[in-house]
Length: 220
Image (cartoon, rainbow, N blue to C red; front, side, top):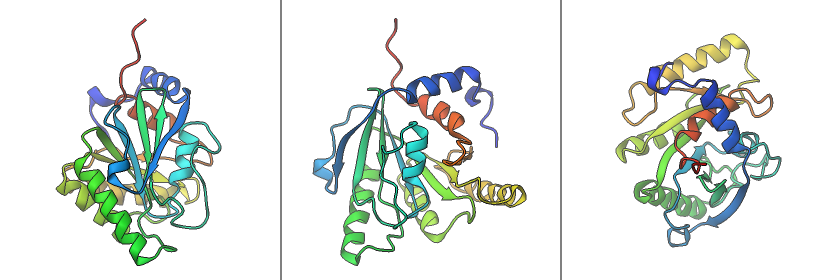
């Protein structure tokens, strides 16, 4: 899918993304309460998706770190909003996964309330990356999240994860279906980023796109 000439990713964009994501990335705060969130400072990129879609793995691959975000095979391990400062230019936000297979109803209700409040009232939220498993495409939880983002006019973009696992034809078919459905959503960014934390596929492109949303580097 094309964004048009003004938004295309070129070699300079990829280098800007590489330089940004090579900077120190540090944990800032983790909160289960809205009044405990960090102050409005830097542009924020939130990473959302179904439990076990690969959010933590993608964040680790994106920042070239093995343990920035905790990776687990048990869904529901991320139980708060976790904020990471990337080089003083961007905040990366790891959100609880929807689905919560191992969570109680009380926990789910509390997390949903926190997520809704965050999405509705965070002026520094520049974009939500909606992560979707490339083997399956959209599920009900993804559609519910996108509906909420549309209603709140929050810009979001889809990144397909685990793209190394399906066969090429299956990946192409899933990407086409996702693209066709995204075209119906007013707040959706038109470009889909196809990624694999295992092989690194799509990481340079994703870094480049997110770098465009960061605070500009200091002039020399």
